[in-house]
Image 1: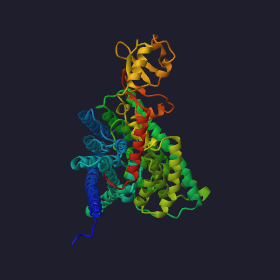
Image 2 (image 1 turned 90 degrees about the vertical axis):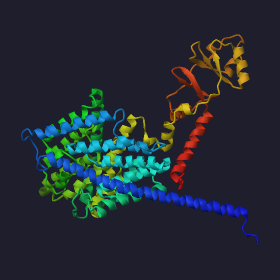
Image 3 (image 1 turned 180 degrees about the horizontal axis):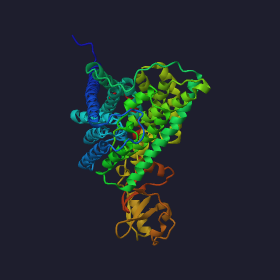
Image 4 (image 1 turned 180 degrees about the vertical axis):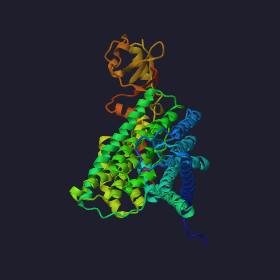
Length: 589
């Protein structure tokens, strides 16, 4: 009895089953990658926080959160940060010519065709950060843990030979796991990975990123019982009209303050680069500077989580908060520019909390006259959330982070207005985040979008055509026209006796000239020229109004090829198609 199935139908069924099997394997692979990264990052985060806590407890003098002013020389405040800085300097010299990976490098890597960061640079970055923060650096571990997640993703890619798309998923998963474990905030971890690093929302990325974030949260809390809490759980009243108005004012102040801080850090970095201080000496100088500042305000040392808790309880006077705020900005700027640092998140939280505390303190002083008693914890939470969201460029992630940290829905809904106003103001007056100037310094402008960034990373030499005609500079019109006819082209490039490009001639400029005339005087007066170091995005802009056969590409005045307009725009269409598939295709290839 013959089979009732058509052979073509069998083939289609087999093809469908094979595709389903492939998608299932891909899905299981994504799931396993996310879970493993989440577990590993959770253990690493807890170990890092524990190491910093132990290091600080070994030497940091006891002090009250509101201790301000000179209380005599304390040699340990000078020795420990300075010696640790010199040790970090030695580590940097060993790492050269590579450099420690920072959060801006992770963001850049996520937009590369092969999204990986330096594994060695990433692991050294975490070690350097633990050494610096354990010795009093006024930064935090949150950024370095994100870098660790990205470095583990790079190791996973190499170990399993993952495709670039898998590598980007792993990178996002590592980032989400780091935020989840560091803050005990799995939802904020998911959004942070998409909003700050990946900068797109894609369904197929959602599974590994979410699983990694959830795994890190579960392992750090439920398995190890070591949930990290940086804020006390507090109650707050429902925000009234006056609260909302004042929180809006705080949003304006936080937005302006974030712009000032970002510009201060950028300016300080530029000045120190011009100073040409040896790399090995920079962390030691930073440590010495921090030790001097700590003599006047010891609460600036370390991440300052205990001081933030004291701010939320209203235990620090507005005048002391203002001094702590200014000292923290100066100290964080020094640390961030001289390699004696962790990440920017903790200083942003501290500065914002102090800003909110100052405003709440002043309103409390005016309470007998105004009849309005501010909720100090609410203003501190609003200030730290607004400052962090503006400097990180992550309003949605910080809104969720505020809720997960405070466990207070009423407070979170009230501070949304502060976050929104602060972000609107800072993005208009400065940049989206503190990372944008760092990326622009490397020639990377993420505001252009993925398509333009891909074109920006494509050198014109990859699009050149070898199909062009060259002639000696002393060629006659008759000889040039004969050679053009043989080559079936309408343009030729003139080369001098040393082989350097001398100009471009076009057929329509020659047809009415005497046959024995020289071509060199007939060359185009202002021809469009590209250099070998130019990229496809620049070429696309430069050739917007171009009419002709091709644009010469020179390297040290030597012709190395030409760019045809058709080839350039074909490449642009291919990039557009690739980006669309990246953002919409649920299959992993």
